[in-house]
Length: 206
Image: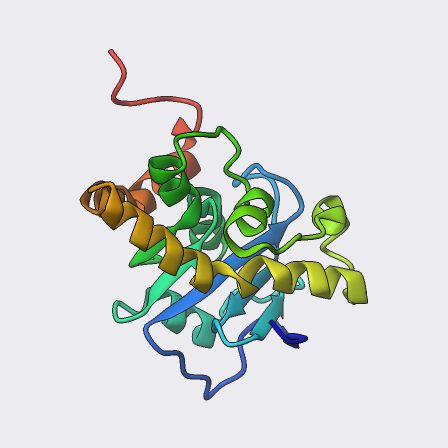
């Protein structure tokens, strides 16, 4: 892939953007507790080398353009570990994100020969791309993102379309696409359970 084009905007996506069929989505936050740690950045990728980074300053959560995209039933939102992102987006933006595809869930259903299902491992094995995760734990609420942060945030959405294509092929090959689709349909509900306080509880357990 050539050098990506990274766009940064404050509190919402620019107006007038259009996406075909699917968009890649990720978030950066101040931590991993939905009710405690705020959303700082939401990244959107079109699968063509463009990434939009929506930087939230914590004062305005209206984001009409981003919300419209996330709720659009005709556009699949591709995540990696969507369970967290969907919950944090609902908590701060009040948007029900659907339909979705999660590359982590798909990986667990087809890459049963490993227990390593991180985005870095997926990109390395399936795309021969080595992601730099150094900025993962940096301070995402800074008024201005560093160039390294921008590149890191963009990298989390630049490859999800390609991964989805390969993972769908593998899901079909092992006859598990229907399982993945059922899991994806349930995922927004699982995220709401996390947000409501059942993140550590398996409600299906005895």
